[in-house]
Length: 279
Image (tube, rainbow, N blue to C red; front, side, top):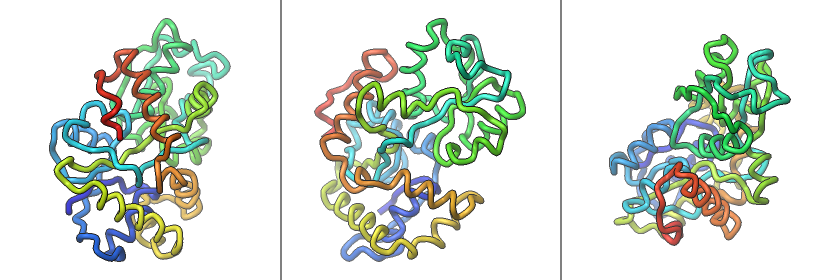
């Protein structure tokens, strides 16, 4: 079975057991490592592997061909994207100061970008200026070097942005949680509707539980793909993004996804779709 997920520590931790043939009865995996912006486009164009990690924000474009699986993804609390700036570029005490500024984002079909747009609609009524899409690992250096005024960052950047001399303008996850009371839906696992989604979910869930039961088993695999992260940063990443929602979305997880995409559809940020397709 072909699968695509990112080289980030949470994904390699979750899929280590299945990828290495440690889940009884699960088929052998052929893995492609790809950033979420790439898999979002593959899924939207019905290309790519049978199973993929994409952004929840990309679901409205793909649900006719792919089914959302109830496990393996990334939701949580205290783990949302951050809006960063460099001292003097934007007043960190006044979000409206983003008006007319250049802001870098990792993808226009990411949860991070949806949260940013929903937040900015309220906090920056005059509208931000140019949106620049760039790979997430290039965003903080670009903000640091003054190439852009602010950056929307994800993943381990929340642990490392201070080392770039940057300041946080807004924690969009905290804003979302205070506004809705729900967790933040970040990355989803999807499978082609022609496949046995129940069996795939069982294998993924078994891989998650194996990872939790044998936390040291995946360490070498995680660090091999961790993009030069320090081991403590990689572990902090895993601790933050691999949680109860990874094993089972549950009612709160599905409610969070429906709330995010429902609001985004009302704002015209994503196509309208039948929310019943989420389950």
